[in-house]
Image (cartoon, rainbow, N blue to C red; front, top):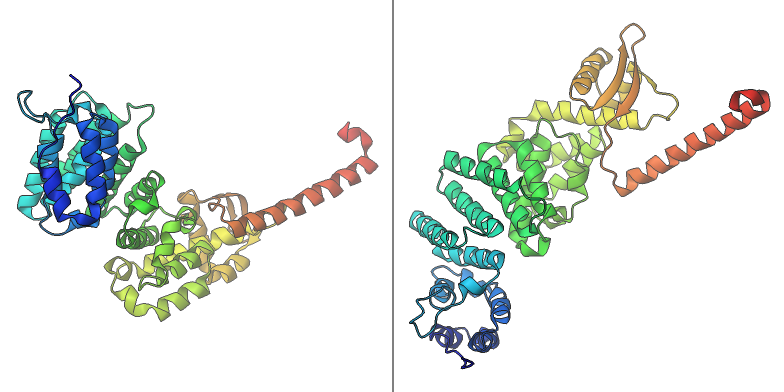
Length: 399
C-alpha cells in the first residue's frame, strides 16, 4: 500500500561514519522510503563521487550496493530497487562501486565477478550491457590478459556499430578501453585516435588533474611517434594540453608546436634544452632519426601551404632551405610525402622543381586561419584584377 518503506540500516551506519555527507544520506533515505527512486538515484550519483570512497580498503559503496540497491527477495523487509532504475545509470553506478575492490589480482577478480553478476540482470539492455562489458575488458587488460581483452573490445565494437545513436558515456567507455588496449599493444597511431575520440565524449572535469596530465603526455608522445600522424592540430587545440603547463612535461607542448609549424630551429632548441627529459622517454630516444625526418615533412607541408595560390611550382633549392636539407635529398623527402598522401603534385627531376596541387590541411588553429584568409584575399584581388583586365580586353570571352 502507501506505507513508507524502511531502508536498510547501512545508510544510518555510514551517515554516522561520514558526517560531512550526512545531508546526502538523509536525502537518499527520505527519497527511498517514499519510493522516489529517481531522487534516490540522483543522491547516490552525488554520494559516490566523494573522495572518501576512493581511500584504500573502503568498501562502503559495495555494502550500499548489496544491502540498499540490489533487488532482494520480496519477503525481505527492504526489497531494493535496482530493477526500477534506469539501466545505464545502474550500470554506471555499479562500475564506480566495483572499483572499491581495488587493483590487486584478487581485487580485479572480485570486481570482474561483481560486474558479471550485475551484467546478468541487464542483458535486455544493450547500452548498459556494453558499459559493463567494457569495464570487464578494462579489468581483463589490467590482469595482463591482453588477447582476451582485445577479443572483448572487438565484440563490443561490433555491438556498438549496430547503434544509430548511443549514450555519450558508452562511447566514452569504449574509446577509453580501446586507447588502453592500443597503449598496451604499443600502437601509437590507434592510441592517438582512440584517445582523441575518448576526449570528444568525455567532459574534462570528470578526469582528475593527474589523469589529465598523464593522458596529455601520452597523447603528445603518440603524436610525435605515430608513423601516420602528420596533423597535430586537434591535439594542440584541445584544452587537455593546458594541464601540462607548469609541470615537468611542459616541454612537450613546445615540441608539438615546433612540429605543427614545421619550425626546425625550435625543434632543435627544445631537443637540446630538454635533452634530459627526452632521454627518459624510450619512445623518443629510439626514434631520433624518425623525428628528424618527420619534422622535415611538417616543414615541407608548411612551406607548400605558404605558396601563393597561383604560383604552385617550387624550386628544390627553396625546399632545401626551408627543411634544412642538402638539395640532393629534397627529391626523397617529396617522394616520401607523396607516398604518405600528405601532398599531391609532380616532381620534375630535370628542372629540380615540384608542382604542388594539394597539401593536407592542418586542422585550422586561429593563427593559420588568419594566414589562410590573407592568402584568400590576395587570390581574390588577383582574380578581380584579372577579370577586370579580361573584361576590358575581350568582352566576348566572358559573355
